[in-house]
Length: 98
Image (cartoon, rainbow, N blue to C red; front, side, top):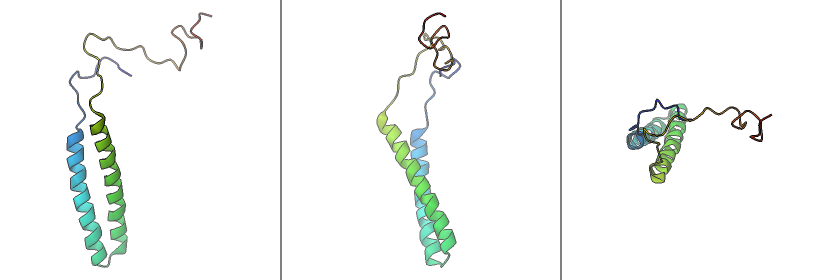
């Protein structure tokens, strides 16, 4: 819902999130390998679970980057009327006045 108080030039830092995900993949993969070689299976599993979480996040970030920019209303578009539970403009379900 648009309230009218959003910054007009706000952008999601998807590229930053992508590079942080790359950093996370490197560290969790290294941690999983190092703990597995050191004979610490519990820590290796923990790092492996974190690796899966980071990879899912990276996939979602890449998906959002590939979707491209979305339409953002400009200053001349007034705030939208709040949703009143799926009812019509005047309160009835079919949009007719009671």
